[in-house]
Image 1 (cartoon, rainbow, N blue to C red):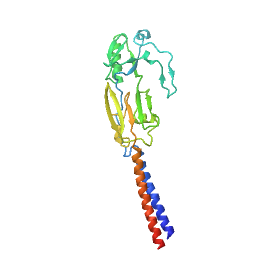
Image 2 (cartoon, one colour):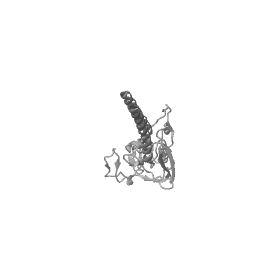
Image 3 (cartoon, one colour):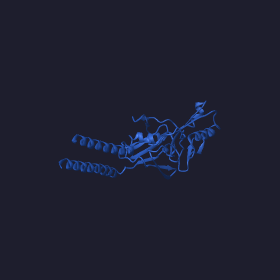
Image 4 (cartoon, rainbow, N blue to C red):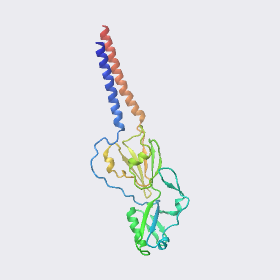
Length: 260
């Protein structure tokens, strides 16, 4: 009889602990609903004010195109962090001013803000074609970076050399969320030519993939709020406490019945 009661109590305790663990696990899992096979739109970055860009122009006659290019910069070094190149890059690039323009040698002022890289490339190519035949133009954003703050393992600012990064990749660069990070309410702050916009995303919902901030833009800031750990701990303690009280009552009642 005592062995049966002991087994019942042990089973109840294991079941209670399992239920508590499942509840905690659910708070940490990403994409809890089914991910469909929908093809999501690829992101193409748009040039903005304060973007620092390089423009390289080449063609059939190297001497003819030389006047359209800034002189090369010496002394660039590898910083040892994912192969990103750092150095005095201000001397071989163009800063898009507050009006969205750059000043290109020979050509003069060109408005690039608001254009994606392909459209900007075509515009520069069109301008240069008046001077040289069959020019090849390459544009790259040199200061494309995102910042991840809050409840992540390695907060910081990360340079993105290929100008394309998703919110999940950015979180990965920051070492993933801590267990205390709130996964259902990630804040993304976006600067659009001086205007700040805020977005909220839920990492546990597959609607994230169709969010306007799934693909991050240059200078986006992610902030991961704490999941009010004290409240979570309090809930767990209350649940565990309730289980223990119930088990204690059951044990006392059982002992009382046996000793009668």
